[in-house]
Every structure is written in C-alpha cells, then in structure tokens.
Amino acid sequence: DVDNVVFRPSEGGLDRLILPKTIENLWGPGAEILITSHSPDWDAHEVRMIFTVENHDEEGYVKVHLNETISRPLTLGSHPFHATEVALLSRNIELDGRDGAHMTVLHSPGLTQVIQGVGFIRFGEEGIRDSYPIHFDYCLDSANSVISKNTIRSSNQRCIVIDASNNVVVEGNVAFDTKGHCFVVETGMESGNVFKSNLGAFTQKVHQTMPQAGISGKETDDIPAVFWAGSPSNYWIENVAAGSEGYGYWLELRQNPRGPHADNFARSPAQTELTQFSGNSAHSMQLESLKVTGYLPTKTSLIENFRSYLNEKGHFSVHKSSNMEARGTILDSPLESNPFPMSGTTVVSTKAMGNDKFSDEELDSENHGHASEPTDVFNLQASPSLLEK
Image 1 (cartoon, helix red, strand yellow):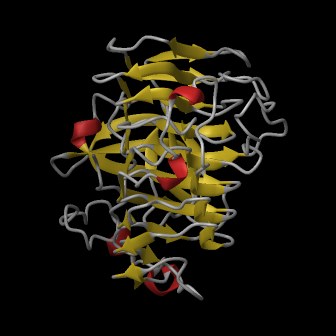
Image 2: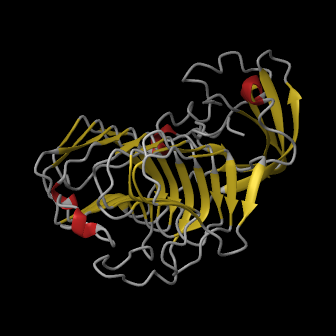
C-alpha cells in the first residue's frame, strides 16, 4: 500500500501527485486514476488520466502529472481519520461487456478459481437475475479461490456476487460507477468468504430490480449498498465504501436462506453470529454508513474499529435487530442515541481538522522531507489497490 502523496498546486487546482517510486513500473501515461469524494456529496469523485511519470528530485519519489487539475482533497496530515482515497482504475487486460455480458463460475466445488488483475467494463444487465460482472454460483467449498486486484467499472448490475459458495477470498478489488448492491453475499448460505481491502465508489441505484424468484424475496438494489450481506458468517476487513446513492454496508438478514438450494440449509442467517467485521470505513453516503435489518444473533456480534464520516443522513440505521455491539468506532459527528451498546467511540469533526491554507514553502514539492510521518500535511490515504496493475 502507498500512503504518501504530495500535491503540487496549479492555477485553479492541483495538477500532480508526488508518489513513492514503488509505483513507477505500475502506473504509466494514459492510465486512469480515481480520487474519491471528500465531501458529503456521494458523487463528488474525480477521474483523471496520468499524463507523465517523472523522477522526483527527492530520492524514492516520482512525480505523476495529471491531464487535468483536481480539487484539494483531505489528507492524512490535515484529516488523519478522513483522508481521501486514490485508486488506479486501469488494468492491462480489460474486458468490455458491451452492456450485458456476465461471468459466472458455476457449480464447481473443490476447484481452485483465480480471477486476478482484470478490468471488467459494462458487465451485467439490469433487472436480469444472475447477470453480474463476477458471480460464484453454487460452488460450495471454494477454498483457495481468489478474486483480487480487479476493477469493475460501469457495471449495469452489481459487482462481485458470492452465491451459495464458501471460502472465497475477495481482496484488493476496485469497483467504480456501478448499479445496485456491489460486493454481495447473496443467499444466506455462504460462510468463510473473506472481503478484504476492497474499494467501492459511485454506487448507484438500479431503476429495475430483478424479479422475485421463489423464496428469494424482494431485491433491494434500488436502495444500494456498496457492501451487502445476506449471510453474516463471513469476514469483512478494512474495506472502503466511498460514495453511494444508498448505504455503505447493509446487513439484510432473513430468518431463512433464499435461492433454489435453500431447502438444504438448516441454519437461520438472522440468528447466526457475525464472523468478523473490523477496520471498515464508509463516507460520502447519501443515506447511512451502516444499515442492519432483521438481525437477531444468538451470540453478540461485534463491529470493530468502524469509521463513518461525511454522510448526508447519518451513521447507523438499525431495525428489528439486537445483540450487537460496537467497539473503537470513529465518527465525525456525535450520535443522538446509540443503536446498540458502544464503547471506545471517538468523535473527530472534519471541519475542526481541516486546514486548506498553506504557505508557498509548504506547498513546494521540494519540502517533502517527512513524508513517511503520519503528521505530514500532504499524506493521502491510498486505496488498497493503489499499487496494482
């Protein structure tokens, strides 16, 4: 991961980034990068193209020139808990679905599947069931299978969907400009899947939801979540939801699993303990960062080190749920009341931390001597896949 970024000012904005030299052979002219929203507006992201990458006078850094200026984001120096994410959108291999293609790994238990380093563009078909960019469908035990370092862009329906499949690692993916729920655990039967260090941004609602199928129940992609969970028996670790027309995370649990194979599954998703939910963050949501509905686990489920800030509506929305607890939460505004027991909560206002006025000397790219320190005013939080091809 890269977390040291310097901005060089230009008239009307910032036109370059100073980045660690480790990205030199991974970023190149013509590649596109995403700068996520750094305001409560869910769609205030910026996409720019890399114009040139040059050596910087200071050893260990390069200058990345952009084709257009960007507005000043929140940095780790001025806003250590609220820094803007930057992600590389381009991939060396890109597949154009031309508004309707989908890729499904179908009924392949015990087989190792690796989907890595690919760009999926315009995949999925809105309103058509099972038409998603990446879909693991009834693969049961899929240990050693990996979905990583991919980008999903301009998806017409969802992003990565795990359906009646277990033990898949979904790590370091970037999803941008997509419709409906994005990173999805679909039926309530899934367990052991790991969602780690993924970034979802500009998540939009669909205008046509998929039709109800059997006991599947109504789909809710018209109120989208970047991360949507129908089964709590999985891992969500250090993911980022950065701009959604709905929610950041939604645990939408039902008493019974759904889908064509639900009759073979005895456990109730609504009563199952949350395996791990830690280090996740959400910002720039039009609704709340975390929504929980219908969750009544028999053992206390823990939300750890969750960050929520710069949202239009608030932080939590909890309905018909109990036996949950949060520890180490960081918010940018206080709660009127706690949705569940909470301990170690910290409130850090984005307004109080901000400082957009720097001297010429501070803005000089030569004056970068302490970039690795967390107090550096130019540090910018990178997305998990900043270094990926």
